[in-house]
Amino acid sequence: MKGVTHLRLDKFIVDAGIASRTEVARAAKNGGVTVNGEVVRRAGSHIDPLIDVIKYCGREVVYREFTYVMLNKPEGYVSSTDDDKSPTVMTLLPDDLQRIGLFPCGRLDKNTLGLMILTNNGPLSHKLLAPKSHVDKKYRFTVKFPISESDKESLESGVDIGGYVTAPCHVEMLDDTNGYITLTEGKYHQIKLMAKAVKNQITYLERVTFGPIELDTSLSRGEWRYLTEGEQTALEERGKRN
Ligand code: URA
Image (cartoon, protein in one colour):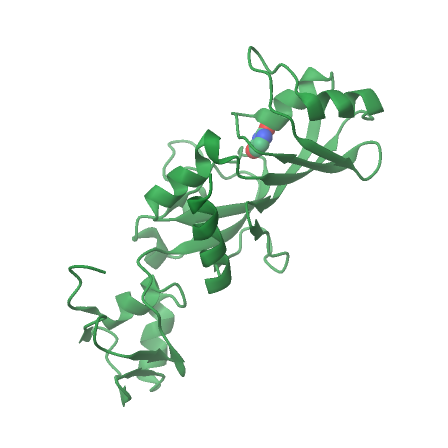
């Protein structure tokens, strides 16, 4: 917060991760935004985040330097900020959120579904993705052919995916072709290559957790929401561990 002396009211609330700019403008117009107890109807007014007490719909807004978004990624979107050929996950966010420097924290293949976290907190993202952080990522998968007990053991202890032997991981089968796999690393196409290493093929892949964050199953594919304060704190705390 050092150096921030005044800020647009709407930007302050948007950056706190509780509403979009359009929602703030609407709430302000309807008297739902107060600065030091006074109703402020102009969302573009300036405030001092170090001194002023801002309330949005009765709730005090705590300044957050960074924004964190959870997205339920659908098939067909690439997890980068721009791409010449395919739509990116960024296009699933409203314009306001496309302008604050968000980027995906980690990648999912174009046809992989599920949990994506987008943030503009570069240092935290870097820490969470660093190999030495060993952040757990859990995926729901389906394979084409039944997984035998010895395939499961191979996957769990490590398989060669083209010159690299994967780190130990956890596999939990629901039946012989469906299960969960939890990795602590994230090599390119890792799960697909691991399946290939045991002469199998992934036909469905969905990420369900990333570190302490679980996919909110009330989000439909393509829908997003801000991380709650509890989730933001859990993620920031996870970034501090190694
Ligand atoms: N492993 C894969 O093969 N693809 C993903 O998208 C994620 C993990």
